[in-house]
Length: 148
Image (cartoon, rainbow, N blue to C red; front, side, top):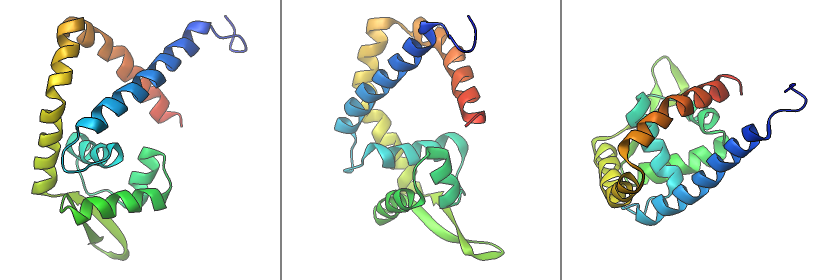
C-alpha cells in the first residue's frame, strides 16, 4: 500500500492502543494510593525509569503538556514531598526536579496497589503474550518519540 493509502490495520493498531490507554488509566487511577492522579504517578514512574534531574520544561515536552500543567503536577508532588525542585547549578533561573526517597516509596506503593489487577491480566493472557508484544510496542514507541 502507498503512503497515501496506508493499510487500515495501522489505524486499528493505534486505535486499540488508545482505547487500552484510556481503560488502563481509569483502572490505575482508581487504585493509586496517596491521593495521586495518573499524571503525578506518571512523573514518578518516569523518574524511576529514566532518572531524575530534569527541568520542568523538559518534562513538559516529554509528556506533551504545557509548562503550566507540568508545573501544577510538580507542585502537587512537591507538596507531598515526592519530588524536590531545586535551582540548577550554574543557572539560577533554571530548576531541576528530583524524586525523593518518599517519592520512590510512593512509586513502590502504587505498583503494589496495581499488583492484583496486573496478576489478573497475567493469568488471563499469560506472561508469554506480554513478553512477545513488548519488542514491537517498544519499537513503535521509540519511533513515535523520535519523530514528534
